Image (cartoon, rainbow, N blue to C red; front, side, top):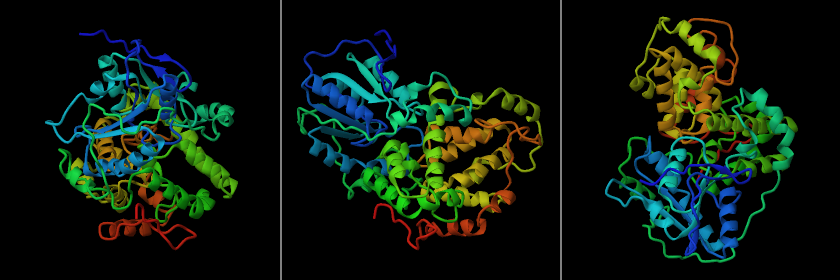
Length: 486
């Protein structure tokens, strides 16, 4: 067995060398394993790969794969990812870069494909994403590869390496971000490949994906077919930019007033596109910054996109327990111990929650939205999490139910924002409040008080129409809704 050389040497602010293997001097190309940054622009990993290829006067191969056995694999997630493949293939061909996409359908399909492709590569570049299955993927390829492996951070506007520890809350990371933000909130300088070869033979199956064959490809995969594709949100960079344009033209001006109103289309709804890397936070921030919307709305949106989002990436990078209650601060651990035996008036099973079978119509509406569309409005998501704590046998069961419901149905699940958001319901990135039953000193929310802050009846009724007429509600100043992907 070869020695594990997972050494992690910081090369620059965004690039980490994960091992100390020598380069392959007889290489045919440089390899970029695209895992999370599924885009051909504003991509620091792709830029680094192009620069490395140019230095060696080699062409570049971009390899992307979708396996069948990742946790919560479903028709919904598979379809959303596949909807971005055809446009990338066309764009990479224009750029003179070879793009290989492999859909691994079942246990009989070829395995160890990255290792095979890497045999003809000078070095391997991949995505530095601090959550879900990606850290494990990167550790595994370091074990197998006999060439240098670099991980590149293209997650946010500020490199994750600018922070050397976990930040306690938004108020601790905000001044640190604001101090250096102008250094990073700048137009992205793209690099061009020098040796243009868009058709290099690569030892790997290459799955041809088109809009017409996606449904058939998904049907052939050994995944959960019960979670259907979203009827509203469709994957790909073109759809991400279409939504961004609609948001800036129809929503951003009033974002400070509408972002907490789930009964209208008043938020960006870009979280799924950010999660899968179809669009970068930098591109979004620059478009928002140069828009003519009022400053209050731009500031409110950029606070969410930059400060809150980068706080979640900081959390998952530095806290190994990001996917458990062990990540919670000491005061929460103590308050849970104090209230672990508190009586729960009502306890719902996971099946009842999944089927929206609670006595609370607002909670049911929130779950119904994510079940059908793949997203849940952030404002009701807070209440959604709080009530599951109240309805579970214990805190561990509550976390497990929230993680499952969010990651199974949410297109933006399995993400640093997701885990930070779920744990916020338990007190992460928050402060102690007045003590009460079950919640102890955790912040408490009720449907009655939350529902008074927006037209909850209208939101509930909208979610009931989704199964037959899946479309977003109109924006405040527009009678139109945005039909994603049409």
